[in-house]
Image (tube, rainbow over all chains, first blue to last red):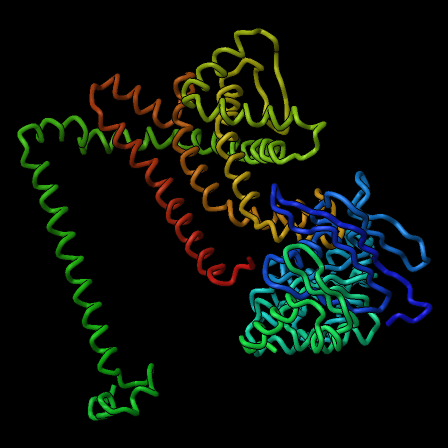
Length: 258
Length: 305
């Protein structure tokens, strides 16, 4: 992963975030290279989701910088106060644990809403791309369905397509399989594998350790808002440096999730 | 049903729920349902029967009957009172769209985030507090009699096919109802907007949509569905409260009934007015109930959190 021509997509520098007196992110620094996949692991409440929401500017950070580099190599500190978050968010796709699909719109409308309203694409262009993406993930026959009529796995795949249709430079996935029936997890993980194959830069918060191990270039273990350990999966899962990481992995193994 | 088929008590029947032969449990459930229906019928007859008997056998009943439930007067007065129904319906139809629009404006004012628009928020908050706190009949008196007395406007006005004197009670009466009711309707809209889960906003904003795009495409359409039943309730009571405009001298069903009563000394025309209002509102009530239950069925257990 540390090839000489590695280009940094997002550079998170010394980010601090508190909710009231509770420190959620404590001096978090993390670099994600272009086409890399980074997994955030750790117990609930360790700050994984908050970090993703901060990158997408859904939560303002208290201190630090989040530098996003565009395709031309221009770097911007997107956390700069006063910056309009809307043009930045359209460059970053986000998928949520609870899908957050719009229940009053068909699958196709869910997907084309952003491209037509935000990117000002024509309706036919947006629908063309949406149908292509749906087809790629085996959902071509669901275009006219409503979210309520789909299984959880299908809904989550639609949510991923919705984010992809904005043609983002970076995807953030927040425990996207956590709300799913175990038998439906696989189909969503396949979509993520496919995205990786296409070279999408991704940051995932996940409880799927086996998947994290398989897909990531780097795994970060968070505890109490601190990245205690960041290493390639082969290292982190087999020979963790920190006793806290080892203990966490031990507990995951004991619960049968690895 | 083939009673010869003895499958009902055999294990194989458990695989055939819903088949022609009812199982022992289905038979029991059906019997229980039949018994419940019977109990309901009997208890209803007993309760209503004794209530009616109590009224009819009371010492004052013959007098009450001639004053309130006089068949002859009813036959004579009902058509006369009914001929004013159109006035009530027309006033209702004139008020309703303006209440919806103005209520939505107030609700959106309360939902603004921009600090420069804070005066709008403050105005909306004070507005709803004021008009929900003042009895509607007082609003009608104050607006209906007070504003024309200011003498600010003279002569005639014409607007979208409406028209008349600027100081007419047919203008200020409905405006009073619009002012009062829009405060309630604004609160209904506001709770509808706030009832749309935060995750929907997060979903929309994460696509790069602005606050106003999020409101327009994601929040308001979902809020609209939620507010239909409570809105229908508010309009139901508006249909009745139109009668309050009679205090300004507008002659409609209630006012006409009162004037006949004053003339004849018999209260039967008021009963006729009640019958007319019931005939108008009961179907509306049923419609609200039907819509609410349909809504509940459609969204239960499948709403995206």
